[in-house]
Image (cartoon, rainbow, N blue to C red; front, side, top):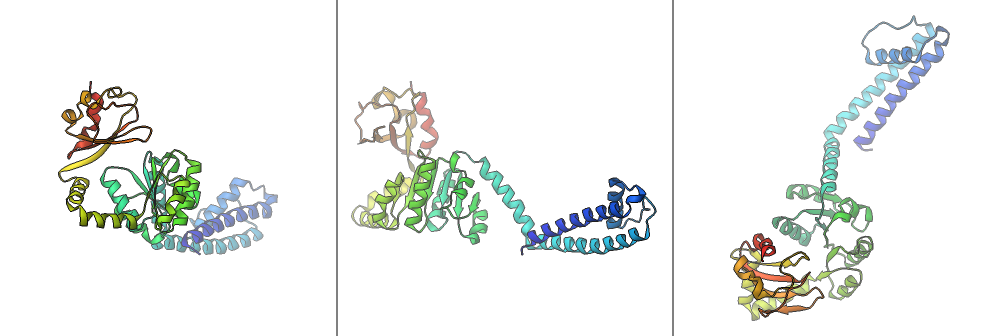
Amino acid sequence: MSARNKFAISVGAMAGVFLVGAFGYRIIEADRGVTVIDAAYMMVITLSTVGFSEPWPLSPAARLWTMGVIAFGLITISFAFSSLVGLVVSGELRSIRERTKMTKTLNNLDGHMIVCGYGRMGAMAAAELKRRGLDVAVIESRTETSEELRRDGFPFVIGDGTEEEYLVQAGLMRASALLLTLPSDADNVFIAVSVHTLCPNLTIVARATNPATESKLKRAGVSHVVCPQAAGAMKVVNILTRPAVVDFIELADKGLELEIDEYVIRKTSPLVGRTLREADVRIRTGAMVVAIKRADGEAIVNPDPDAGLGTHDTLILVGPIGVSDRLDAIDSVG
């Protein structure tokens, strides 16, 4: 039995002794007109051993009852004290406080990313998202990762991600995206189906151990599927055949000298209805538009300066570090 349960039982036992004792005084001393207040006061001075005088002259039966109350009271108080010490020493009291604080933190998250699975890939993805200034919540089934998650500074839920309650605890209904990095493709598919039913518009990115699972994940509602083996193999081939390109992309991704970013044109943006030439994105932000992804999914690589811009089009930009901070300046283009 846990120290927390022992302490709860001891508190219940103390309350029971108090109620039974007070009720006993009322029954035994009924002919003396003992009130509920008198009986409760008698129990307080008896259990606390403060030595105050009795509120009425006790009969022999009441004195015997008092001795029994003292005996049982000392036993329950000793048990409660030892349980409290055990609760403090075992760390459960601290754990309760930490869980309360964690629940409050999770409830305050909004528009955050949820990483389900804190293995090697999940931990690296969570760290990178945090580095980019995004709020992240983690769901992990292994209790031994709790200390690591605290050290890394992530609000987390310890539980099985395939169970809906843990997803809800992590703020699923307020999240902007879900990353599934569980080692089991079957679990990732199951979670994707559940989440897509609850939040059909939520962006879901999933890891696939087996490339053949990609189609199942897509049907389950996953927006993007990443297969580490396939991605690793492709990178090895690119290093062998196009090393300069790989170096350029890695340089951009690390943000040492330049950045690659994207900007979604909002309905109220003055860019709507203009061409790239008229927008002067490069002059105003220092970024070069290398591609446009239309709202209907069409992708235009190396777009023509006369290419028109519309609502919900996505601009892919490359420029010196700090492009992200200057993207909002696009909305001021007149």
